[in-house]
Length: 350
Image 1 (cartoon, rainbow, N blue to C red):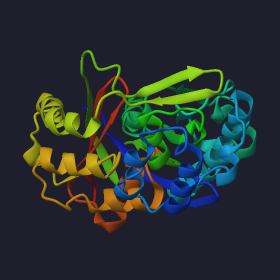
Image 2 (cartoon, rainbow, N blue to C red):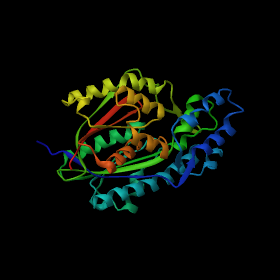
Image 3 (cartoon, one colour):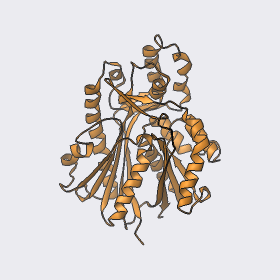
Image 4 (cartoon, rainbow, N blue to C red):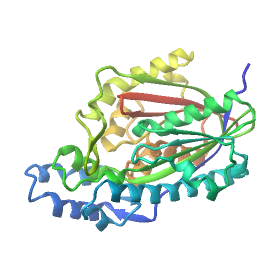
């Protein structure tokens, strides 16, 4: 029987600029209120989002300057490479290994375009070997952290003893668009922040937990729920359907189906760990999985302190759950563009 991949370490990092939600709300009103008749009605999301602060790769005023692809890409490359280096270094140090010992690096990022990709740009600085295998992945959005962990685990399991480093970097703030007068853009302005997470995985080695199983569910005819639009100014967010009611109706059956294929049920899960897309999404997931209001306390804490950072957010929650004492079996889940549900089961080794 093949040896399972172990999660050896996990680390998180945020960029240097901490932005208070109240300051974002004031700035957004200055930009949008006079030109967007629906703004005052939509502005309630700044209070109802459950977010107190967020972190960004640039100070708040920078986002209100005239910005196009060159300026946004420069910030993505600068901020993304720095976050990659910081969070990867933390995860490697926690695992007690060096960058030169990494055999494969999986990079997840959907908030900017970099060719060569981020891991190539930091390779010399961090100390990767010349023969390291690089797996950059784009387009998974909020599901990227969970799907990336699943991919990294399968790569580790396919070569027992090899070291796989997963690095997830998202700079959602770079999609802030003062030129776009839409509900989706106002919601994105109220929700999104920047952050990064990293994990070290190895098969047949002791660690925090073993990766038991993983799976995905792709709903048909749902391309319009979430994604990016692209124009001369940069990326723009797409939210064409309300996500909380969709999650409440469809998420539990999808996850139950994935678990069923592995011979498990939702009753076998000691703790669900969700990507906290927003307060309304968290409330919808508590109802969908009959968890009881307030059960997703770590999700709310991460959201309040960091906002929705897209792909790394679920790993921020997982880190808190581990620090609090990992239950016997947790199921890490997220939803993302496609529209997709993804999950991965972790069994504690302690």
